Length: 245
Image 1 (cartoon, rainbow, N blue to C red):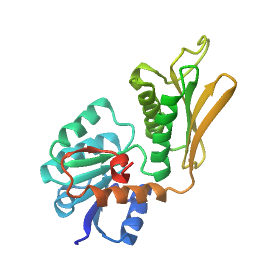
Image 2: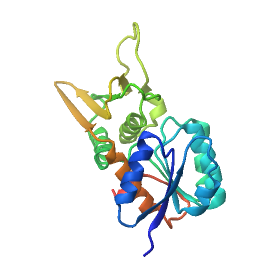
Image 3: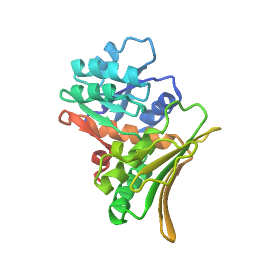
């Protein structure tokens, strides 16, 4: 079986450099090349089976349009995508397979399933709060993973996240509204990523947490997704699909 030819968008960035290392060390994967901001992506798209993209929302949406024309699959770890940018991915996924995930670590994706299960099991007397911390350079907040955890909790509660979430609190907010999902965002230092979902009920509190200490876990997960997505039918997939969860 021939190796999966993989390209990298944002190859000189922190994640791009890690992807180079992981792809080079992964059996069945072949690194074809990479692009950075300002580079012409056409040659890369024409020469590979899958492109892994951890760049910026606007760049990711633009690349998806070109990938659809080239018939090249995508693995996308970009966070902070707007509704219009997500709409672009949904449209292009009618022509190519796309793996889109807020987080590519195995532990986080197991956590997503646990959060949904716990939210479904516990009653409305348990308040849900999502807490996340990342390094000082992260631009979007809450993190994509935090939003994913909130979505998992909302799914467990049988309601859309938009109808439940509280993005911030300041001043006299009054009592906490029943059934809402709160988010708290911390930034500082070189924290790779820490996420906790708190279920606070009468007389007890349940906390589910994940702490990443090495960014390589995200690169390994993305490469695993790239190996999986080659040859799939057009559509948007998640890490649940890749991992068979």
